[in-house]
Amino acid sequence: MEKKDKDAKKPKPKVHKDLSGFDITIDQFGEIRSNMNIEKVNEFLNENVDDKKLAEREDYDDIKKPRKKKGK
Image (cartoon, rainbow, N blue to C red):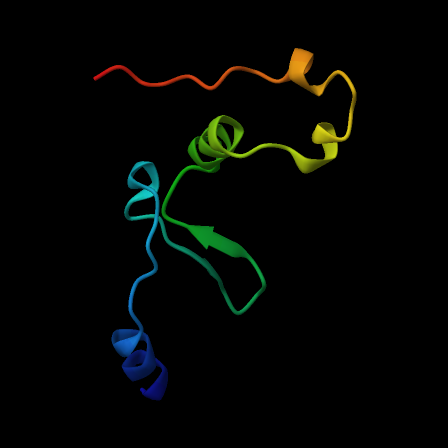
């Protein structure tokens, strides 16, 4: 029961509004458990995070996809 007490006292980290409610854990078998579809997480990362390996390329600006803003 000590683990539950520690988890209850631990504050939730700040996350981007598009990922609100996202939770990821690793179970006792080493499997990653998430409450969000991995495709949605990958889509978010592709839109919001620059690829450091590609940034070293001279043609990075040419191949970099423009970030799309969702219209509301």
